[in-house]
Image 1: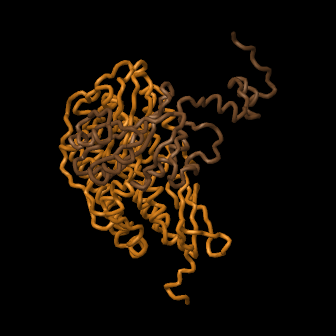
Image 2: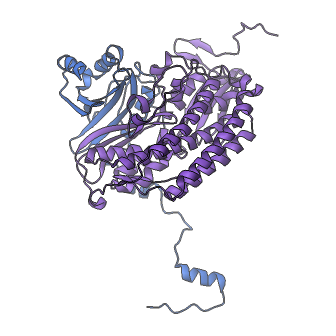
Image 3: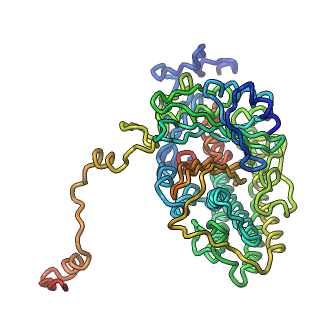
Length: 390
Length: 181
């Protein structure tokens, strides 16, 4: 057996970086993705391995590019609402809120109070839905096949509620300029509470099956460590940063909608590896359930849910620019909107957290991990490719 | 914004305004931008870079670049804008300040044709692998002309009247109806 200090299998280091000579026989180049069960969404990882250890990784995106920003520039403001929600499949409501809030801010529209409560409700419901899908993915990436089935089944109960509320299961288009589209259906509160209790029950099962699981512990502890110094250098936000002990949560730091009326504290931990990030997100799911209950208890019975904007087919927004952001499950998610006073936006830029997490951060964290742990690492950063390429 | 007023004279900040209490915009000369961002990041607490993006103004022949930085202490975001010429489309790179800046710059090179000399991998394709045309996010990029030139109509695709089509499928021996006029 070779001594541990033998660095022969690693690339030769020079001033210009690592030299990887594929002809040397030491390295193998593998393409993981764009269609691969171990990759979140359609993106591809160009992995160079030595043995089973990753020595170099490059992220390639573009397989989901649908030119949303270009399409939005050529549509009326109202026509973009069915578009923006499609930028993030598991959590479309953050997009709807960000775009609607940016448009309303430039147009000078103040939404009614009940609409703000309903928007917060859908944002928290979609956080919970997105986390359920993510938790299944995280467990599945480490080879635990049962937990994804539990999670996705319970995500479907949430989608049923969304269907009841908005008519759409995946894309809701519930948040529209001026407020929301409709009030809560009769008996919604009771059915929501039933679903929340079901989810709580399955979450207690997941806690036993996942966090005490020897395989999961062995593989996830110490995987992809994010230190505090890296947070601002790489632009890390959301649970990835909170797991490293940085208590930054836009809902708390810059409260939007009615988050200042709810009582909660950002979930933090002191060491950001794949295991702790899973734990932090698990606690945030519990937090979302609690917040949904607080919202349902405090939501006004009566009141307007919508203020009528001007004729949306001739709607010119005054010139100006703004940046509106919200805390999605992955962190800061924002819309930068520039209007030139015409009926079409001059520019809309969508800022998604995966832009950082899946490209520069993943390329850094993947070095020296085992190739089998790469999917688990990637899911633990909670990346969605569509928000990178927009 | 008091911090910004101190910087005004030193960096010749020409235009500053508050959009919201927690969001401001300033405009600065392209030559002073990297120095200003470095000071904002290292001295003034604007440690987080949210994004870099460009806004195209073909009518004036300019690009407006926006660098959105955020200060977590004061919960204040600042959009640092600069205007560059659309013809030269050249800007100083800030990849040494934030790791993710190089990805944004790579995307701007591809989508707007703005070059950032020295930024790692800025010439590599990011989203559009094998793209031959002009930078597609520029507003004068004619999408229709490009697709008509690049993708000729595919053979085998023809449109037919649904009623006639179903008649011919279901009743091949049947003489079709006369068209109702």
